[in-house]
Image (cartoon, rainbow, N blue to C red; front, side, top):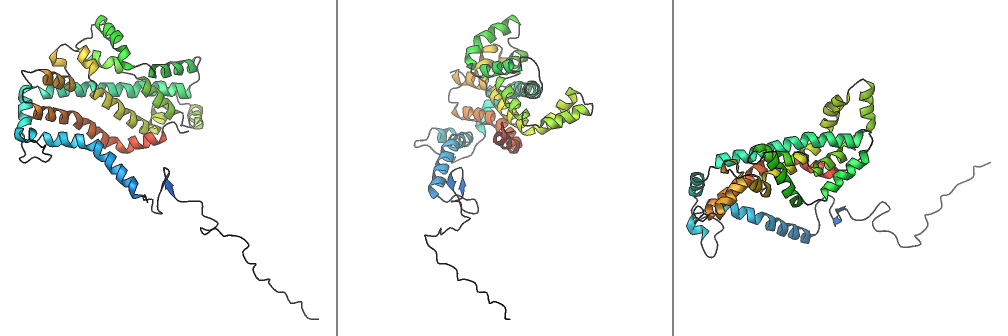
Length: 312
C-alpha cells in the first residue's frame, strides 16, 4: 500500500492592495512631531532654517555686547555699525575699573547670590521632602499656600518687605538682601515634584533598618535629586545675580551696591557716564560671565532636571 502523496497548495494571489512599507511599518520617525531619518536627524531643511534664525536672534545681542567691549570709541560710533572691531582694545576695561570699584560690587553680588542659592537649596529641599514624603495634618493646605504664593506678583511684596526690613534694621546689610529670598515658593514646588519620584519602598526600608528621618533625607533623598538641585541652583543664582529692583530699594550705602545697581547708577550719572558706551558693554559682559560659568558647569544636570520634573 503506497503512502498518500501530499501536495502543498500554491500561495494565493493577493486580493487587495498591499502596504508598501511592510506589516511592521508604523509611520515616519519623528522627533517632537518633526519627521526624522533613521539616524535621528531632521529631514526638513525648513526646520533647520527656523532654528538657525531663532538662534541668531537670541545670540546676536550678546555677541554685539561682547565685541563692543573690545571696540574703540571710533568703532562704537561708526555709521553704519561695525560688528568686528577694526582695532581691538582693552581701554574700556581700565576706564571702568578706574571709575567704579568693580571688585567690591562683584563681591557683593556674588555673596548675595551664593547665600540666596544655598539657603534655597536647604530650605526648599526640606519643605519639598516634607510635603512629598511625610504624613502630617494640614499637608495639603501648606501645599496650597505654596501654590498661592506662586501666583502673587513679586513686585506686590516690595513695599511690605521694605517696611519689615526697616523695622528689623536690616536696610543696607547683606541680611536685608538675602532673607526676603531665602526660601522661594517655586523652589519648594520644584523640589516637591522631584521628591515624589523617589520610591516610598526605599525610604520605608531605611526606616525599618532604624534610620532616622534626618539621615534618610540627607543620605538617601538628597543624592537622588541631584538634577533638581542643579536646576534650582541655576535658576535661583540667575535670579539673585540679576536682581535689580530689591537691591536698589534696600541699599542706600554705595558700599553695599550689587553689580547691576552700581552699573545702572553709573549709567544714569551724567558726570560719570559721559561717552561710556564701551564701559557699559564691559560692565554688562562682567554681569553675564558668572551666570554662563555656572550654567556650563551644571548644564548636564540642568537639562536632565528639566526633562524629568514631575515624573514619577
